[in-house]
Image (cartoon, rainbow, N blue to C red):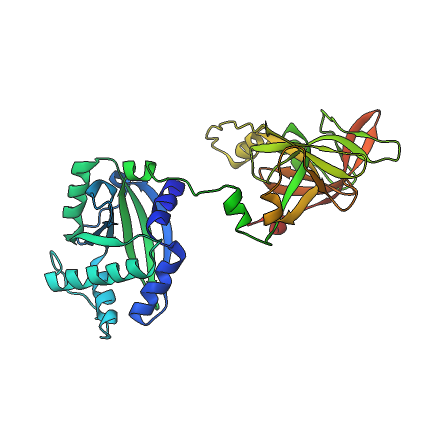
Length: 360
């Protein structure tokens, strides 16, 4: 749901510009943090929230709108700062906010939308009690999704959320990604690892590897030429990818693109709910993992990647397999070197990569 929500939001606004635009209007630092995304029926109720329904001007249907809800204290603080008044320290209880405050808050929301737009004009469809506007959306689509937010205004933290019909999320188009979009990155250097093979293992076996140990990946399709250069089929694939593009290493150290899409298998297995921590650790040790053996990477500017096609040659600039990487689930876990043990190719572990260097 988070990915769908981000795609839907990117249709309407530049997400990184929202905090800046709101901060400029309020004259203070503002930060918006996403806490969770869940069905509205599972979200905590916000009975006193003020709501503002926004939609694109060229498609102002309620079914395509998004509802922004803010707790009463946030609404008052935003309006007070926008008109350069000191926000009240204590907000008196009330069943609903005054029409003047609601209208002023909607005006601030509209102004932020205009400043952070993604190439489309937004309009306010309605403003008022959040619960009432939720009911309007539910009549159009009973499956609503809520993104709960923490809004930091100066040193104060407030609660807000965005409520969107699930149908609107499902209709959000993916980001355009083609050769033209890739070429637009210009000289940005991009790298794709060269995957020599993919093999199944388990967490316990992988965790037991120490420098000097040899990991045997099993199936190995590469051979060595007369002068010791690795040749044969490889797959170009991003670290977390489940699929890659076929290629072939040549004797001259060049990489020839094949262009076929090849799957990189990934196995998942459910776990029970052991009562003891020791049992949990034991269970995790049996969880299957898929280990990728990578020979290095092909690196070039984005504009050069954009014009490549089947049969094109990529110069790697050095001999591959001088140092290989073992990668699991997109994370590099060890460096090693290729060795041969009784006719079988293995990876001798040189260094385990510490957790702090693999964390993102």
